[in-house]
Length: 137
Image (tube, one colour):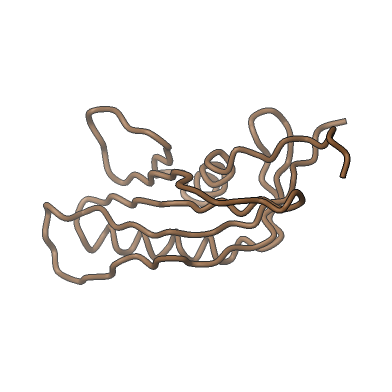
């Protein structure tokens, strides 16, 4: 395999761009400051591997709403968006395009229905399948 292939896309940027396009009124970030204003989705790469052709990042999403039910709803919407992102192209900040070949749920969110204001973070873990990005000509 040649060594001059473009590097894999930043999986956090790919997921942030995908979710921000779908939820324009929601802050989609990889890090927060001291104050978090709901609704917010936090995305982080927590592991993964690649086979030289496809990157398999393990992604953690944390959804924070105004209440536990709002967080649960946002987490369910995020899960549906990620699972339906098959053959989706995501344009990144540098002008390159990352292709999501698919995704799977590793750990589903926790859909408790009670409203406990102290437990508003609902997490999910996903594995994405990302091709190397196409660089602009």
